[in-house]
Length: 586
Ligand code: ADP
Ligand code: MG
Image (tube, rainbow, N blue to C red; front, side, top):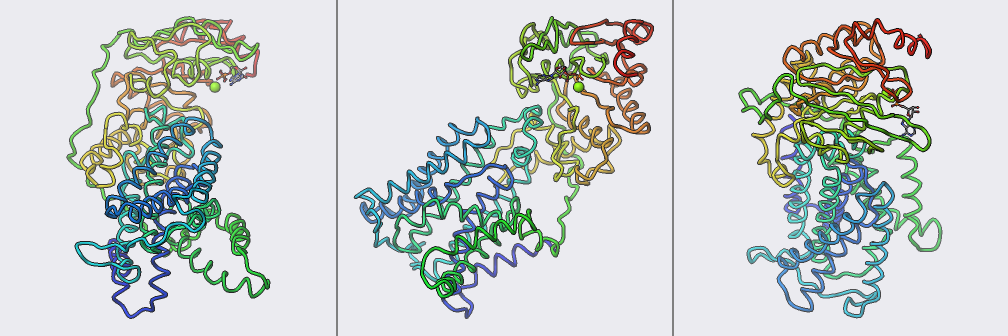
């Protein structure tokens, strides 16, 4: 049944003008389509990627004013003005994004407010843009000699574009770049550790949203046949954000629902409120503000979630049998020096968290890094994986210095890690989470994904993700949502994701922490099996018993310094180690 919902909806919207519905409906429906194109961009940007823009109306304005100016003043064809308008909007988004997206949270919202205000000011004050009167007399569109007009003729074009945009967004989200985009909101550190440039995908989504806004603006100019500054101001920018949030942050179809609700309610309020209050003004904004607070309180996921309950949940068809394997890297020979940690040091103010610690990991070994709480294990781990910068010393991996590299560059060289506190995308399936690990072994980009030209590679990625899940005994749970798993399986899933990167060295930060006895045994079994397959592992662990039966060598830390290094038997026999552990808690 789910296969028919989209075609049926599309057919209704495209054929609506041919049905005996009033002109007013067509006008409203055209507005809804125009709004949906813009708020769709915000669903991706704000709902999925967690970035806020108040300036989408300004991008709409770029599309609209470019069309208006070029068509009326220079007589340029509308298809060329579309291209110019979109190019200008994309260029502005690239510039704004490049300046702000590397920085933390608040810079983008602030920059988009400034951008919205500046653009609106320009429109309202420039003689050549008609100041507050705007530009009149924009010609209507024609396609293949067919005059579309501004009513029933234009409606199918608006909706064809809106539906195509929705389809492109859905396809993008269900792809290699899409999984990276879905990791932006809550999984940036993890994504970077999987080799993903989060900056790049933030920029991609921001530019895509600006692109959609400019296309909507171009349509808007030809629909209204005139432009003026007010529909492109900050108020409208907030309204677009409102549509995206109301409809359903994170749901592509929520953009359509939000746009429809806002358009229809706004229309009613504009008639009703002045009658109630007695004076005219933009009072609907106040009502929207109140509604937004109520919606955020009682339906934080938006109205679409209520519709979604009545729709069948799509299931991923397992279509990757026989897919070609992903490329693999050449592995180091057994016994080769893999990781050389040479007198690394980390100070936090006056505290020396890691004090000139040195150790080595050779290919095929499991090395344990143990010590009481606060000994500096996680800090050492983060120095090796590039999450923290060194205060001194050097880290060499496979003969190359890696200190100072960002974690995604280190991942590229064949180091893969898990996290002391599990980092995953809870609303993605186990399979999709693990497929994130295959990012660096695949290449499909956003445009390819929107055009569905990435399917062969997707099958390869899912085949590999399933293979890694089978390796740790979790293939049976691949379609479950990761957030629904217990802690034990979540930790195993992280190991599968790390394995999916095809690593030369696996780094595990306290994989047994918080696990029940049975789960610890299962984890131990998985690690033993990986070792028998030749995997090299650096295991950071607090639980001494857990590492005893597993490791070839153990490095013991206390108060930031290396206390000793030896075989499990030597460590167990050491009075110094026993004292360190006794001194703290046991
Ligand atoms: P372990 O993983 O062995 O329990 P950590 O490496 O997390 O220990 O911490 C070592 C010491 O460094 C602790 O005293 C801790 O409080 C301190 N520390 C860790 N991270 C930071 C930080 N970002 N800023 C300040 N102190 C820190
Ligand atoms: Mg720790």
